[in-house]
Length: 237
Image (cartoon, rainbow, N blue to C red; front, side, top):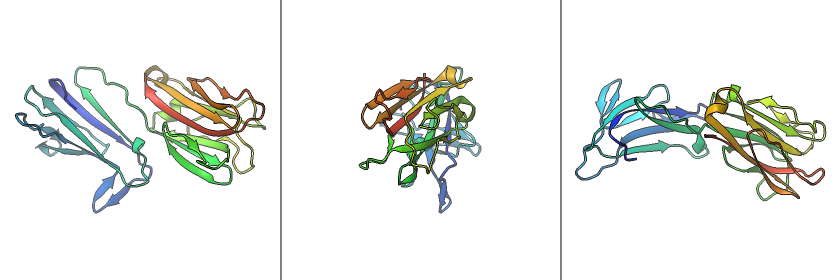
């Protein structure tokens, strides 16, 4: 990443869910350094231990650096273990004196799938039974702390056709009773709605894909059409 001249502050948001430590190294993790380039000087990162040519970001604090015309490009390297979601890491680069650009938030969707139980999916990833024709009975969405008060969603089923809106972290639908979802919607509220948008899509057995945005309820035009897959992402406006 080639940065214009200026002073920058770099932070990383690392999900606590599924974190592991191997030989003193925590995963997921982020390292910032320089991309080696002839004729350019390595970046110097100001950390609690002084100036260094590289730094590890734990999520608890950030690092500062000064970029000049002779500075090498910034290199950001992320490290995850097998099974950890790539969306568990969100890195922010702020030029001091400028407004911080809102980051893409970590979204984790837990879908309760017919005959399969709970399965976890990353933001923007289709939650489904794959090649099996099993419907989704219920789901829960979690992730970045901002979602707790800023994200709401609903799920229609034969018992609750009107679809009750619930807050992030709450189960939408009914698991374990064999009842398919018949629709779903997502919306942002409060301060989060000013900086981000929620994009989502739903796939029905007969209707196919229906897309929605910011509170639009996705339903099939076919009666009692079971919901087979859905995806959701929270993105900067």
